[in-house]
Image (cartoon, rainbow over all chains, first blue to last red):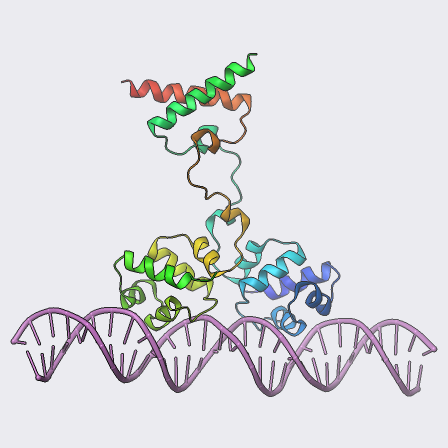
Length: 113
Length: 113
DNA sequence: TGCTTTTGCTAAAAACATCAAGCAAGCTGC
DNA sequence: GCAGCTTGCTTGATGTTTTTAGCAAAAGCA
C-alpha cells in the first residue's frame, strides 16, 4: 500500500533486469516502470501488475495487496493446513450422508481385497 | 469481459435498487453507475467493484473476472457447483477414512435419537 | 580522448475513471 | 393541468494511468 515501488525495484534488481528489459519482456513501458518504482503512481492497473508478477515470478495477489487493492479472501488466506476430513465437507444433507456412507464402505471393501 | 454492464444492471434490478440507492449504500456515484451499466467504462477500479460486490452480495472475483481483470487462480478454482460429497474430500489417507467413518456413524446415531 | 550505447529519468500528451451538477421523461397527488 | 419528486442519463471538470519522445550521466570501446 505504501512502498510497493521500492519493492518492485528490489525484485527487478535481484533478477538482474534493466527497465528496458522489463519493458521488452512484460510489455510495460520503461518510463512507466520508472514512475512505479519511484512512487509516482498510486494504483497501477491489475493488468499491468499481472504482467509484472509473471515476469518477476511473484504472485499476482502479492502485488495487488501491496498496491492496496482488495484481494479476494480465498486467495490471501494461506491455504489452511489440511483440515480434518469431515471439515472439508461442509454441512451434509441426508442424501449426502447416504452417499458418503456408501462410498466409504465401498472403499473399505475394496481395500480388504 | 464484454458485457458486465448488463450483468450489473440485472443484479441491481433483482435487488430492487435504484441508482441513487446504490450510490447511498455502496458509495459509488449514480452518474458513474449509469455509465458502468451502459458499457461506457472499460476497466472500473477494483475498489469500486469491491463495493458493488459487497452490496449486491456477489463475489468480488466474479466481478473482476467479468470486467476482464486477471483473477488469482486460488480464488477461481473452488467454485464448481457443489460436487458429490465424496468429491469434496479429495484423496483420503487411511487415517482419514477411519476418522470419517467414525464421524458419519456418530451423526447417524445422533439422528436416530 | 572522443564516439556510441546503455540506463534511469522527466515532460508532455493521450486515454481513461470518476464525480458534481443538472436535464428530461415519468410518476403521484392535488 | 401543474407542482413536486423520482429515475436514469449526459456533460463538463478533475485527477490518474500509461505512452512516446527525448535528455543527461555513466559505461564501453575504438
